[in-house]
Image 1 (tube, rainbow, N blue to C red):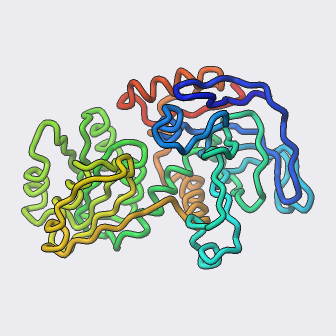
Image 2 (image 1 turned 45 degrees about the vertical axis):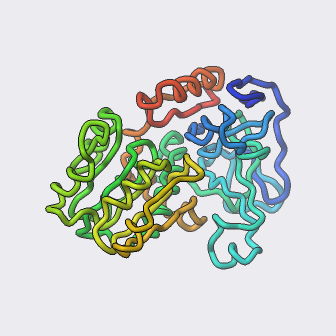
Image 3 (image 1 turned 90 degrees about the vertical axis):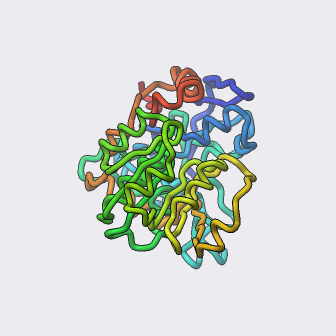
Amino acid sequence: MKSLKYVENGKLEIWDVEKPTPKAGEVLVKVRACGICGSDVHGYLGLTGRRIPPMTMGHEFAAEIVELGEGVTGFCPGEGVIVQPINFCGKCENCLNGQTNYCLNKLFFGVLEETGAMQEYLCVPQKLLYKITNGCSYYKGALAEPYAVAYGCVRKAEDLKDKKVLIIGAGMIGLCVLQLVKLQNPSMIIMSDLDDNRLAKARELGANYSVNPAKEDALKTISDLTGGTMADVSFECVGVQPTANQSIKALKINGCAMWLGMSQKEMTLNMQDVVCSARRVIGSFNYTHKEFGEVVQLICEGKLATDELISDVVSLEDAPDAFRRLHEEPDKLIKVIIDPSL
């Protein structure tokens, strides 16, 4: 079978590898759609150390069941599934508390040396499968993972009904956060980004206002839009020093900044902006198994604008060029899906 291999920084190749066989408790799936995550692009460039060559990336995927391993029940060959990519142990303290995203023994498909879904077939544990229902497409299903990242963060925030919300970063995750926040009926959603095309997309998806800090005083604009009260809650979806500071400074007294971007490891913040205004900063990492299932339900019920986020669908052979485009022209693409059957 064909597998897209990350072989060295900036280089991807198609390899012919052996088709896997499911073990007990596993199913063999035919990958029908796999999204290219921003972390995959950073890994392919050698920026994070989270992808160790030679390996196959891919953790945002939907697939068709081909073969059942021993002991698997409740699934049949031919069924479509969405795969939750955090392979949690189910036995450690965090798993027993429902925090599977913090599993002490977890493996993550397509990360470090763990084989991912940018290939034709893959074996996955039954416990990670969610059936595709209501005629949902494989392409839509592959977006469950980034939506789940956003959902895990939105769930940690306070009730957003009638609140003024600022979302910083109109990339894939920021646009997912936007849609999930909108479901809670806030009084106002302001989207901030440096790219006008992305801001236009955010307005199409429900943002009431947009701010471009490269062209205007963002804090003054946010103050004007909120009548001087500033935002109740901000979502930081970029993870660099200027946006992290913006997420705090744009808050009202006792406001809350939700951080899920993490591009920059260390940065400088003004502690007085946090302490003297009793503002809170809450970090969010991934999602629980339960939260992933809730996102699958939202997608299958058609409650999220999934199609609006898919910029292109490519074959495995065309995937290296898609990685190049995502690196060189990131503002022109939101989500690129790899379909190994093309």
